[in-house]
Length: 339
Image (cartoon, rainbow, N blue to C red; front, side, top):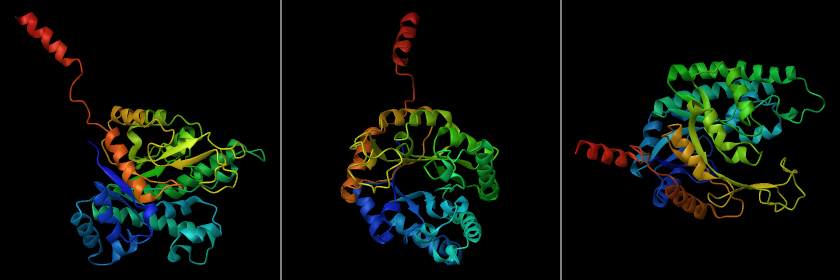
């Protein structure tokens, strides 16, 4: 059975000393540590003696593992067109004076440092975002030539290839969470991103079906399209087509939980994702890594949600078969022939 972990990003207000025992009491096998709040500090990990040992000991004291580090917010700033919204999600030492190119370059260095910190902790995957210089042109109006989008992918490659090369030296993979606002947000753009970085061995995906489904993307087909590039898995549910008809797939500038929304994230098992097909496809492609619960539901208490989500995943997952289901019949026939 694959380990079931809890992504800590939605729990950043709780210190790890409180979250770790809670996660263990709920029954989780480990944590996917987010570099937000005080769960995992990249610069302390690299520069403060004993910090990594303390993080490791804290997890181990509660019987928890760490299988991935996530630095989504910093990764977002590497390629983005920087504006004041980024100030709210970045540490002060990365924001600096807010000059956009300086922010992007500092964010890129921090992502390399994140890989160094992950390697020092013995964690093989860094999850995150990439940002995108062309997301704002999604709709293609004013009329947008492919050459414009080509330059966006070239910008992504220029900024991320040095990061990926550093990860290669460290033996760490970077897993992009395919997601609106990133350089890859569906299957076609994921393929284009792979091509932009020359199919770099350290570039793959943190698979989360919820970000694909409400767009109308074949989220099970995504797994079968990129079987060797699925470096990590988030499980998060979403429902779509349940709104009032006033808001479309682009969100209508409404907040999560607004009943007018066409789509919204739901606690696992309460949305429209066909998770049994997801689990079957993960087995077919040989994915044996963690199933990380990224719990989000604007209507539900998060502890209740984390508990029911874990129970849902435990019922959903199953050990891989070690033989064909009809092998016994064949063995019986062979024994009969010998008799």
